[in-house]
Image (cartoon, rainbow, N blue to C red; front, side, top):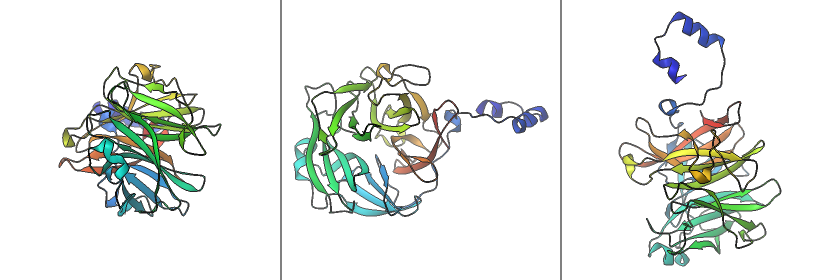
Length: 322
């Protein structure tokens, strides 16, 4: 469609467009803008879960892990912190900072699970912890301890966790940022902790910028969404959202052209344009009306804001925003 708009509009073209219906994945100049959101929408690295009562709970990077709520997926309000009294067990990794990163929020077995990261910028002395809560509300969370950590001698970085439960009911945690790329470990569903010592590699760019994995199963495929390029530089950020898919949760994941994501592959589905800079750290979840993708992006001012769009799949089974 973007190519058609570049041509001189003729009657023939107009008639052709009304007569032919095709599914087209938007190119960079035609990505839809973020949908309407209001209220407290300053977020970074958002993760969203739909609550049993129909409302929405958001966790995102912030002091002691920040929370927001919404009743309608449009108006959001601040809802305190996961750990309002602090998270002293994380300071070994944060250098004393209260800022905890990139939480992954889900609802499993009648309770909320939160995997969250502790690190400092540019370091892979990092850790992922687990907390659980029956309500998800601020101050109700119990820290369940360390899940996986990385040291400066490791070739991976233990941040940006994402839980996926496969078709056999097995739990997997993907994670990673830069270094040798995106990793995956198996979890024990009874504890939410690691079930073995194996670390699998599922995506990488030969040391290039890749992070923020998110895996969902749709149809016959597991889809791995990641963010390429640079985050956290305000309006100069170059984050963009890429995707690949596999019939197995552990991979191999390949992009639309068949390139393995372990060899730098990935099909772009969202990038910066106009006043939307560096969209990324995406989270996909199913809602009653559509699949939903949430992410952060930077405004011209450098503020990090919540982006929400509907996500659908074309006739070949590849996702795109609308």
